[in-house]
Amino acid sequence: MRVQFGIGLGALHPGFFLDASLEAEKLGYESVWLPEHLVFPVDMTGSPFPGADHPPVPATTPVFDVFAYLSFLAGRTHKLRLGTHVYLLGLRHPFVAARAIQTLDVVSEGRAEIGIGSGWLRQEWVAAGLDPGTRGRRLDEALAVCKRLWSEEVVAHDGAFYSFEPVAFEPKPQQRPHPPIHVGGESDAALRRAARDGNGWLGLHHTPDSARPLIDALTALRRDYGREQEDFACIVGANPADRDEVRRFEDVGVTRIIATPWQRSRQALDGMRRLADRLFD
Image (cartoon, rainbow, N blue to C red):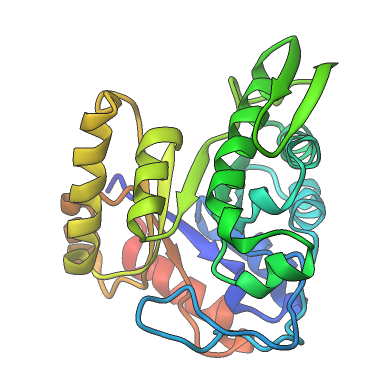
């Protein structure tokens, strides 16, 4: 099977992050993925899940600097790819974001996978002193600047949100021209951003049937942008029951599944082993 399998660390207590990552590499999983937020306001509304209006986590949920933690995991693993799911790039100045991403890619020897998104938590933007109504445009501009910093010798910029005189940015990421950028989200704007600017798309938890219309929409958008011949990852969350279900995911265009085969953190390692036994050769 061509579908790759990762493990979603965000569904775990942080005390299990390292053990799950080490076990994932041992079992043959290809990647681990860590979510992030800059801060959780006590008064939160909204949700990343369509149709839901209640936050999926409490404000007291433990959160870590995603690139510091993934860099730590890079030092304890050898082949495992290390992903953000998703990094709120628009909340940071592009100098900060580009440096963090470049550092992870260098210390991991080219194992970074960067999931980005505009973010569902509007109050987080307000707490950071930024207008949440600008988050999509800030993300687009910040990503454009980051791509230039990663690939050009000298960069100057004069935009709607960021302006600076010529700067140098070294070293460049190990992956050229930059680590894969996967755009998260299922709104029309997120799908357009993924098709236009991304190397892949990060969706929510899906079945083959629910993933199909989103991937079909991405295929049409990529054709409109003249990118249909470029490699493109389609990533969803799922815990497939068997290889036949994996083949159905593959048939609709899914290239990577992020699994969370457990109900409680203490069950995670056994769940990962059982899933590997069912699906891996």
